[in-house]
Length: 97
Image (cartoon, rainbow, N blue to C red; front, side, top):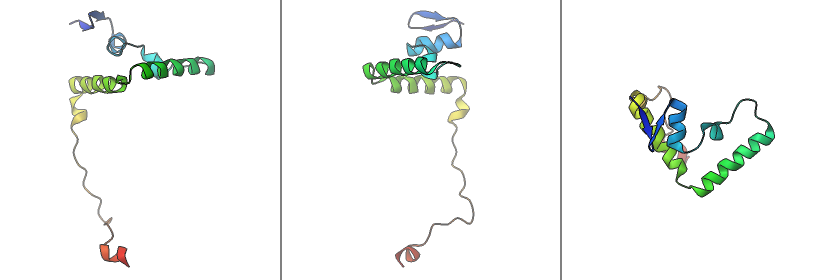
């Protein structure tokens, strides 16, 4: 099965993500061993992209949620945890005193 994004065939997972986002993953995550100057330039470029595309964080969140839903749907199975015993809320009478 081919992974096609925006008319391009992704060769691997990283390329698929880059095509879906429209930017290289390293721009957001950085690379090991980058200098302070390289980091500053990368973050400056990222800020420019965010300024030009204010809906970008929403698109990224949507892509991440769709990927989780497709490949790891059990992560969306959220259940409420039981309250721990012995930790009660103070009564209103005690709070008023």
